[in-house]
Length: 291
Image (cartoon, rainbow, N blue to C red; front, side, top):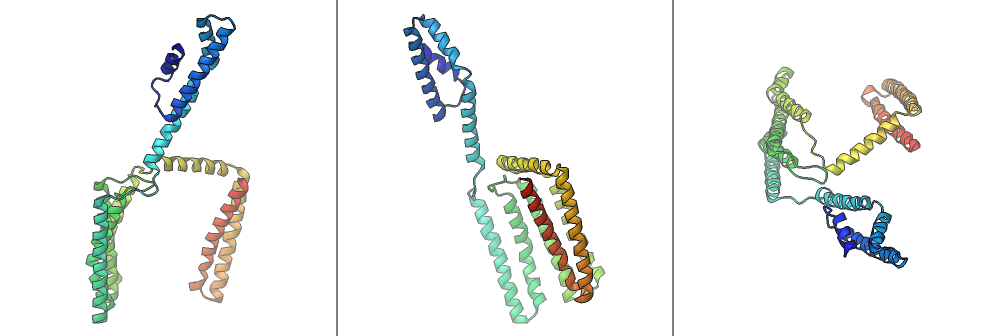
């Protein structure tokens, strides 16, 4: 029938989703009934067909929306998985790394209780902590999560090596200071070949890293940034924020000095923790008021 052929051609190229097929069937039935109704009024079949088609309007907009919704549903299923399954390589890697670390902890405890030397126990743990720490970082970065895609293994390997180098340097420096009573020059000198290069490499990797966040996460962040920008652009909001923050930090400094002379400065620094908490409360209250 001409109406059915017309509707089929109208929806060529669209994804044949169940919603779209139902929509096509409904449009076809309505079009046929309208043509019959116009013919019963005395119109020529061709004229009746043209008039009924003109009355449909731009139904492709609805079809576009249906197809777009289906695509979003498919993307959601692909990217919005709360707990992607671990592949066998990652499972084996996590188990092996945990086994190495556990073995090192047990060996460290045995040496500590047998010799009574805490630093000998820490030294025994070091050969196991360094590789397992780097392995955990490598495995975590190459693992897909609900919000991010896996990193390339070559780049993740550099992160792992840097982490191992930093762990080794920090542990070695601590042991040199406490066990051998070395001076600070020797202790800090140990940081140079291990910790500093590791930190520099991690900084380079971090600053040159492309976003691995999944599309739905990016969209959520963009929406949050838009709302945050709108709120921060409000002059009244900014003025309240400055006044409250200024008063809070003046009070925190005054309490720090006062408590420092009363109970000691080794305890009075806690006031700054309360100041930070106050900043969060201020931000929350102002955002709630803006909404």
